[in-house]
Structure formats: structure tokens, C-alpha cells
Image 1 (cartoon, one colour):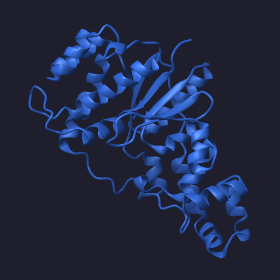
Image 2: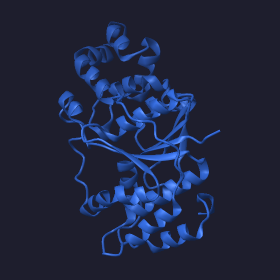
Image 3: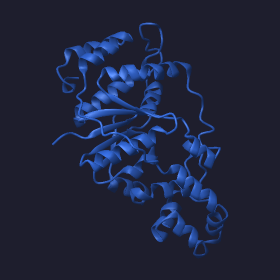
Length: 289
């Protein structure tokens, strides 16, 4: 059987690598190359472990306009991109392309939307998808043929999240993740959630009522504090759910393409990542790295 499609949240992976590795790792022209090095090493590890049929890196808007229209505070408190990381973002497309890894990019959508759309296309074609991310929003994509490889910041390795793991962690099915985020909130996205509702209460509400709309409709059956949170914030909670819900767009199903070690080595040499280049040049396949 062919391997899975490996769909990668490229901005997250670059951010994670930038803060996990010292910025004293410099390239040929003196720029930091830690984010590029860490990202390449992570993907090469996953490629060796999972044998994907192809790798696609997704880039998108920091905050999609349709989401900030719904809630202006969405992503508003995120710090600016450090200059040394911004330069590596500029280099990333050419660098990753050298490895034979394709890319999907959108100025109006976020990387998450592209990841979800790729997973949908792959499953429709009878394939399997692994999504590399550190964003729990992506758990809504998890199903029989889609898993998330969740990378924790500053920690090597990854955890595979399947439907049973989503249920174990949050007490809900994957399709209820946007409803859960709306109720619980998501500090990383600037979404406050329902006042006084934490993860346990959010899961209990969804278990009893089946959805955010069901919980709002049955608010009178809840404790006064929870009832007030649901009714007084109903419109805002529905907006939070829409923000957390991935937008499906038309994307092509990527063709099979093996990782190009020779091309990756050439890109590594270009940027002064000579030890990485030497490893790639000495390997016959990703399993040798």
C-alpha cells in the first residue's frame, strides 16, 4: 500500500524549531538557520518513520480576514515575527522545494484551512493523511483515515492523535472540537470562550446536549451561572465556533514524490548547513539518516 500524505503546518514547524534550537546556528552569510535546520530534521525523521508517499508544506495568512471580521481580537496579541525567523521564512520555500517537498500557499486562508482541505481530498481518494502540527484545532480533522502528529514546543518527537485519543483528552468526538473551543476558549488564538466554562464543563455540556447550539437552547436546564454564560454570550460563542471551524477549499491531490536527498543536500550547502548536507550526501535513503 502507498504511504500516507504528510501535510505539514509549516509556520508552526518553523516557529517551533526557531525557539527549540539556538539562534547561534548560523549559515554561510551569517544569518541564523536554526528554524530551517530543525524543520528539515523533524521532517526527515518523520519521513523515515512513516514512509509518506509525499510531503506537502502549507503556508497561509497569520490571521484570515474572515476570522478577524468575526472577532477583531483574534490573534491580536501574538508577538511579531523575530527578524532572524522572518528571513528564514523567506528562504523556506526554495529550501523545502530542494527536498522534493511540495507546498500549498494562500494569502487569504490560514495554513490550518489548507491542511484540512488536503486531508479531505486525500481521504476522498481513498488515502491516509498525517497532519504535522502543534495546533489542537486540527483535531477536528481526525478520523479513521486521518491522524495528527502533534509536536510539542521544545520537545523532540511527536505524538499520534487518533479519534480515541481526542476522546481521551477532551471527552468529545473530533467533530465537536470547534464547539468545544468555542465554549472553553483558546488563549493562543485570543478566544475567551464562555465565561466561567473550563474544559471539563465544556465537555459535559456537549455530552449532554450534543452541540453548542443544543447547549444554548437548553441553557435554562443548567446552573444559573452556566445558563447566563450561554445565553448572554450566545452570538459570540457561535462566532468563536465559526472561527475554530476549518474552511474547506479546492486543492489538488498531490502526486507521489519521494524525498530528494541530493536536492536537499544542495539546498543545505547553499545556506551553509554543511553537516546536514554531509548526512544527506552519505545516505542512500531517508532510513539511513
